[in-house]
Amino acid sequence: MIMDIVPPDSGRVLIDGKEADGPARDRIGYLPEERGLYKKMTLKEVITYLAELKGCPRAEINRRIGPWLERMDLKEYETKKVEELSKGWPRSSSSSRPSSTNRI
Image (cartoon, rainbow, N blue to C red; front, side):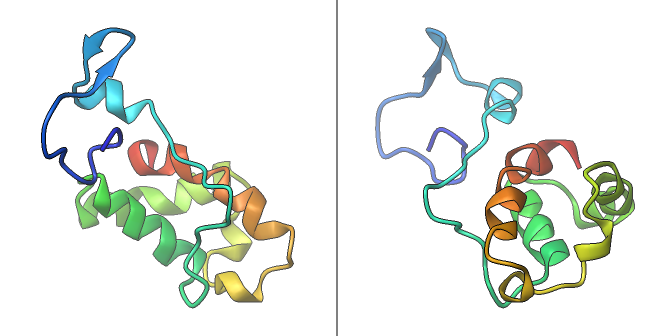
């Protein structure tokens, strides 16, 4: 609800005591205790999926994902499935997800 993926049944979301709006929510990321990555998807597919959940249009994702992966030093992994990556790697890639959904 805080990330605006699931609407609240009632109540409202406040950030620093103010009503949460799009820009305020865009600054919030989610990093689960468990990896939370979709093992059968490629890194590019996971990032695309999460960006779409946040409302980013597919055309914009396609235009910006390559440069974003290069900036994050992840370009060589974009077509690898999450299950193919080393055990420690998915956790570190998870930490880059919060920024991907609003800054691709």
